[in-house]
Length: 432
Image (cartoon, rainbow, N blue to C red; front, side, top):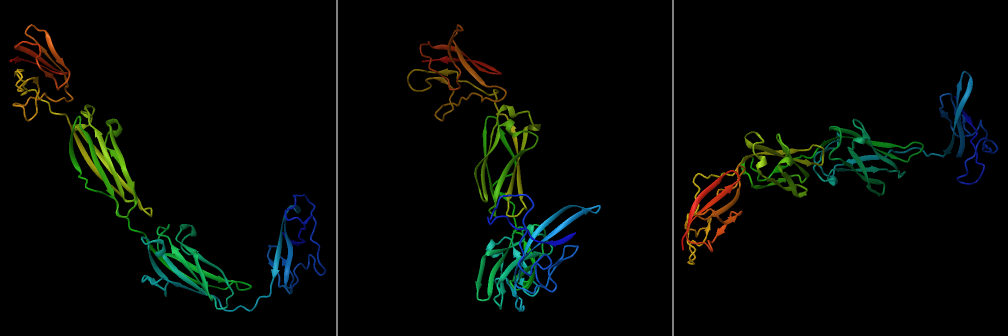
């Protein structure tokens, strides 16, 4: 139950006294005031069993009183809570005219002042997503507040806000702005009341304007891959593939790029994607792959399919995605010994013609001689030359071998070219 009580007093004049325990002193009443007449009036201050306070004051001033709420169980008091109050009684003049609130769409053709319907383009800059409002107070009482009261949405949805930094007052008019989010929660139209209150006594007078706001989110175009050819591409063992992957975004959003593979792990096959540039509206990256024999006979038909996926980070939450795919067909380097020939004579006589026994693939060579290339089946190991008695007179592990025959007599010699999987034998003639 509720009852009025004498407010508590302080035991000291200090603003922040030390904490002390009960009992506490009571406020001393002036003559003519007590618990039954804390706020003089007809009737004086009263409180009912529901805690409702009533009073019709007959005296101006600042008055104090306490309200105690007591709790009983089985007829016995088990606790209470106390709150001290101050009540200021003033003499209010007769209320005049309420303020007038007007909304101006700054010349926007998509605003109907009669119905309050307005469309906001979310792709515009924030300063262009605002409406001006004017609060006109002919009595110059003063503005108490301007606020947005949502009707069909929550204030936490971030639909609109009053730009209080734009407030300006001239004569009897306050000018301000209400600005709208480009990406609010919920769905349009958003219904809201703009309420302006003055400082009239005893209660503020107010005016309101109801708006029906349709917010059109900014359009978001998906990023796109520039100059990228999808399909199939043949790559050979031993090659180092470097493929440019460039993405652009018309909206200028930040982008992300991801490499995905179909049925294999890119890291196990030395594939990588390195971004050189990542800025608003643009990514420049390079896909690289060192193709080796380990990549053969792993996937069906040696086909490796990779996918590049680009996502944007738009102003709103409607992310757009683009992707391209490319299938690489891995082939071994062709290496045939079927028509392979070695030189069979050389003449180291000082005339600068055919002076060495060597392979020759230069334009000045009378005839092209090239060792079969290495591949996954076999690699070049060495060449060795023997005289007619089987003694080794020259050996080299390089493909670029070069034998001058120095110190050797004219005659027939025998060579052995060794690969890891094959040996080639033949003879040559040294003739000066």
